[in-house]
Length: 122
Length: 107
Image (tube, rainbow over the protein chains, first blue to last red):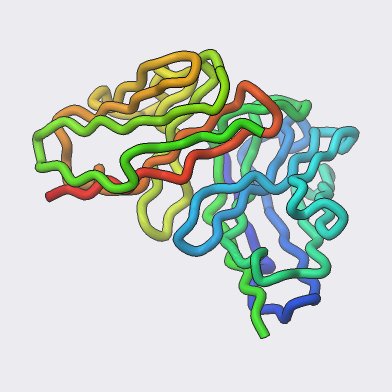
């Protein structure tokens, strides 16, 4: 079974940094693109970033471009999201989501982690 | 970016009755439309993809229809565990985008 387990969330002050991790298991990690999708409290879902299986293609939502960095370590079956210059509006549950292709495409999402909460507040 | 609009925001339906949820796209997404169910504290669960194909393990009482810009999720014979927020998502254009959700309450 596909398992995605996020960690690294917590409380951080505006302007601060946080690094989220996602441990993947149950599939050949390097064969699939990976994504981060977030959900602000009481709000809908927002795509944040995507990375192809070989890290050749990386994309960001305009709302996080220049502040967030997605990366992956295929040897360790892990996905990361480095978040810098955090703002109050970045407060959300961040989900690690597996794609169904090696490359990055617009697609539906079948495999989600349970999420990790990031709170940006002074 | 394609804007997805869901209606109504909240829907209250009695057990055993049918619920009809709507999703409209700001431009055509052909049949590249998915539906998700989210219960409190849980991650979204894929219900429908390709506008009408049920995902693995999804009961037959969930059905999707539509194409282009107008889509419908129908839940027949509602059960208490169907109480949740339902989201639509278009994946025809990059980046994919989600609707704001419809909260389904069971009376």
